[in-house]
Image (cartoon, rainbow, N blue to C red; front, side, top):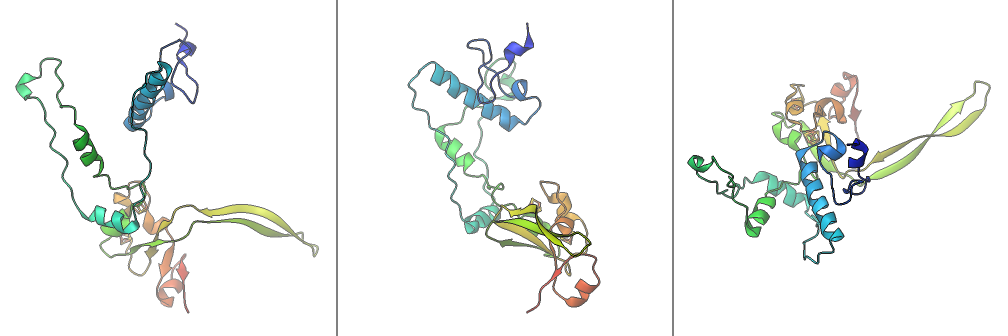
Length: 220
Ligand code: SF4
Ligand code: SF4
């Protein structure tokens, strides 16, 4: 069969063969299990819409509205997962479901354990033995920067340069005086960042600032 027939539109899941749908790795090459699960749900929605089934399906809700304070409190608490009922190990040489399907209440309970780490991570502030990483908030900003070019003959020209943009509210800085560059925050960072190298290094004494190759120092 021609593989092209199994391609779908970017926005949809139906292939060029009527009533054959595609998703997950088969649609987009290797990706994550989460994306495959999401494709499965969206494909089901597309099939339901195509079949004109009038089902009352709850739609995606993306309305977190959680304050920073709530996020920090959430991270400070360990909430155990709901107990999952599984079939007896001696009763598995068959096609029975190993894990029982969760009821709606349990699903909500499980989902509410989410720590919203896409909103606020701050792991590097908690794993540093020296409290050298500090979390602060800013308003997102966007500056269209310009530069002045000197032509060497006494004239200057103003030109567009690059756009400097800070999109996230929650930010991290590193207090250089406290950091001994042990690398622990790099080990624990879920995005493999090295905050002690990549975040702004702030010196709280002028001596530290004068003896460092990079960094910032503020004085009144
Ligand atoms: S490298 Fe610096 S900021 Fe990171 S954990 Fe070590 S002391 Fe803390
Ligand atoms: S630098 Fe890494 S550990 Fe720190 S807040 Fe960002 S993602 Fe989290």
